[in-house]
Image 1 (cartoon, chains in turn red, purple):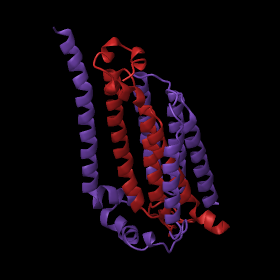
Image 2 (cartoon, chains in turn brown, yellow):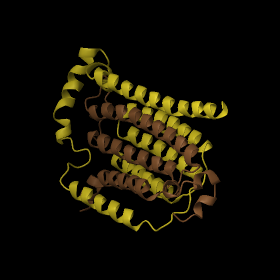
Image 3 (spheres, chains in turn green, purple):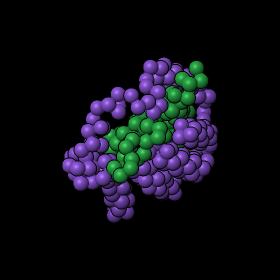
Length: 135
Length: 182
């Protein structure tokens, strides 16, 4: 049982990280924090890819004299691409957050939804007052 | 020993994420996410993925943190108190996580050299890659030579994202200019 735990701990840690990221995306209302949660979800997937390619006692896949056991290079290639694409999506998401902040003067999901459903006059009255208007 | 190092790093990452989820100050959240990225980069070194570790440290912990801090500069730095207890999201993520754990039950063990992942494409790249491409680093050989078109597609994605960001932020400048004009 202990051997099974040690052998599969990396998968379970990755699942924990992915679910924690998903939880932050669902449960937290702040848009920047949602994006951080999305990033955690993404990086946990890097782990899911790279960890199975590891061989204990092996070395990094750079071929040289005196080494015969190498870890699997293919997941590394795929994840290199994924990291760059991940930062591109993060940058685009942050640009959207900045636009939302300008249009709604808030980056809290609840506040934004309330302004969407509130009568037409509330946005022009400015900050703070929107909370007291019952839609 | 290597397994122990990897597992300790993973435990630290889980701790960082738990603290991150409970913190409401966004500056602290961003610093914690940078810490998490550096731990991830260290874990990648322990997993022999040195190229991934360098990219993660530079892009994941460096550029992402700078981007997040830049966005934070334009926004408020405190998260509002959650309006209700997050029981439903907690239940959803916990049950999804349990299903995934059930799915790992018959996956190959960590660093099992007989696992299918080590049997097929990778040995051919390791055996012939340096000779065919002249690059001793197999990751570079695959990325730039065998799968060069994938990398071209990746640059297309980055270009599209950059164009999207410019479109979003440029529109802002034009609308403020329009408001001032009349």
